[in-house]
Length: 564
Image (cartoon, rainbow, N blue to C red; front, side):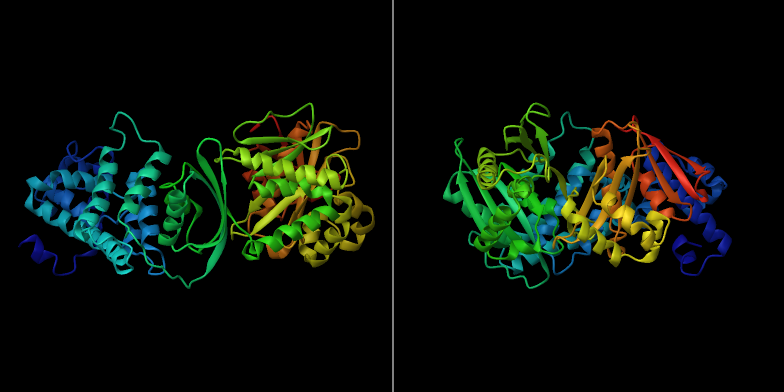
């Protein structure tokens, strides 16, 4: 009886399980040893079956390969192209796939399938399986190209089949040559080339690509050639990505480039990497940051409102300067210490005794950015003499759901907001932090937890300025200068989004800055969530019960010398 006929009726369970083991063993061996180095006897041995079980199932090694390839799932990037969301920009889909193919070629082409492609010309049955899978890849890529064509975004001179072949060939070529070429291209150079090739497909006068789905603001800063044509190309790329422009400023620089500052509104599903890659076609350097709801308001009104806030609260100048240049973090340092300015570090004199140090990874600061931040600090210094170090340490962070939060050193005026945060928190949350009912800690702890102690207190604020989390770092004992106790509390509505982890990480950084050599944390034995947060830090913790507190509380200790 032929194999095709036997497959028409259900196999007995034992035979079905045997074939599943053979298929799994063959897949594993082809992936680790390669088709050429794997025999049917090797497969039988790995599957723990008789060799005749394999030979009766597959007539040759290439027959085994054909069956393995037919059962392979498509790699994740290929699946994403085949299951493309109609709401997504087709160019976004292609750009994302190109970036994935360069960084992880196996996400586009499985190594076993590449072996099958190489052997297909020598075996008709294997070639039939490969053609079937290739047809599915072709249809997926062709569909994306057709959608681009349907939106008027592809030049009339471009052939759909040629564009489809290019998309498939690039992915296959990257996977086939991975690790074999003498030199690998730089990721940024590859992104720029890919974006330029895709832009070349676009119609000379792209239509307005309307998008009526959910959007979110982003802040974009690019360095492009100093010409009107370059600015126009930036806007053209944004149009092809279905990105709306909210505001744009340009500034000519001495090296014949221009700094282009934009606030844009992007489709909700678009990530920053995709937008950055698309803009690489017309920009030398690109920085993309998440925006805030305020970014969609009138720009002039926002600037005036921010100026009024700085007049009333000059100590917020370092934070405002960081926001102005899209810095990742800021600190206020003594004028005689700290790191010097560099491409990714901006150091600005604020007062005779203190400097503001801004840091940004990935995109070097431009001269005009330094001029802007310095001008802002000079303005505030003229308005008022800010207390040394006030507001001088903080970060802008984004939680798992994309929410933008600010984490900074607490100030005395935060006491009321900290108390309000505790009032909004559940009794269970407060008890896990203080091991006591709320009325027992209010009087003697409120001042302390709001920053009135040696060590440091951090507050986390949401986009409205409301305190939603608190982190404390203080000496374990009054005269202790080596070991610090660490603790956090996060309002119930903000739990599970990564805020606790961020607070703990920044408290650990502060502990090192303040020259503590060890950390300790007292945690309820039942508070497994807090224990897991601590164990995610790059520290080795030891656990023991505290005889003064009882078996219900665990004491965790870690040496700060590790992970520093």
